[in-house]
Image (tube, rainbow over all chains, first blue to last red):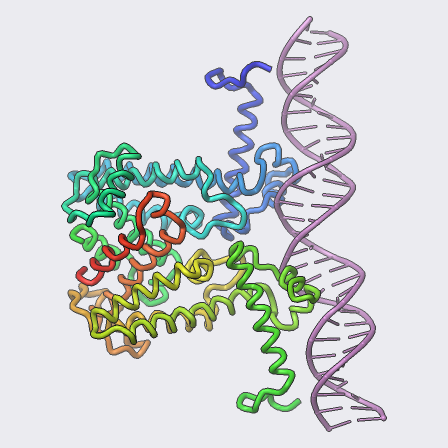
Length: 223
Length: 223
DNA sequence: TTGATTTAGTTACAGTCTATAACTAAAATA
DNA sequence: TATTTTAGTTATAGACTGTAACTAAATCAA
């Protein structure tokens, strides 16, 4: 039993495993998109891949592990989208605006995945698994990054200021407390807006969400 | 088969039915609180009430109907809490602040119920059932009401302005578009803040949510 | 190339659930 | 008191997760 290769080239079997895992995730994503997280079923995925249900337990320890991996992938994907958008923006203000719009777009394009990330913790899966938290932080850091330069926010009052400072420090961001707070509140508002939009609340009021969003975004810049 | 009494005094049986339905809901609420909406199980409730599972289908057509009723009750309860808080406030500004704080408190005290209302639509249950929508609107109207007087928001640009006006009209609120928009965005921000707080995001950053909330609330007043 | 070993898949099963059907017993009603 | 309604029962179908025991195929070492 040679020490499991970290750097060794993948064997045929490893590639096969990776392939199957990928296909399983794809099938799971499709189910997620169609009927929400609760409908992701190991059995059904097996059927779809032409294999018995229990076979998939060779690849994922449990349904929850599968969902957790979907969530981690989604965080990575979201972080990537935010980073790309913020790179495209010219100057601090526009960079943040671009990231915020990208946040919304990502959520609208794949509402099920957004809900997987920010919706209620699901049936059994552990929303506090370390890899999940790390992935979430990574995504958050991108947002924080876009604000790092833009900010002209007012300084938070004391107990908060040091909490914010120590939080920013622990994720090696150079941002001061004011920036950190602005970033966090920006995230909070973005999440609020987007999750109501995804749930269809604006549409059911006959409102145009895109325009509403631009207004909220403007407030974010100055607020 | 006498026409089912709408106004007739409730018979013994009707009272009994109401009682059982109430007990079922209580048991369901307890499960909800402990393990989330996905864990609400007809079977388990039956066991807890000392009755077989299928017996409960005399009282609720399906698990989804039960969840929907829980949601409607929750909306009513939330609306009540908001109304009480806003009545207590003296003057427009404080009234809105009181309602906003009540919104947060309600959510923190019963996070599971809050998630039932505003989390992802669950497995099967129809988030667009009419009674549910009505209940949601009623709660929303309370918030709108508290803002009706307070507002000094800027007027929204055109396509939105008329959408907002017609929305406000259709729920016989006298509020103009500026007030309506302010109310909606306030709700959006409240929801964002509260749902991140419930999910433990602020706590996991070492931040004091109560203080953060007060800052966001202040921004809401002026933003 | 052959033989031992690992691994991918199988079926069978235990145990959870929702929901329906067929039936019994009790309560309300005429 | 006789009839009808209703609350409950058990049995069952059909879905799911996850484990166990087993088979067959691929890999690896000699």
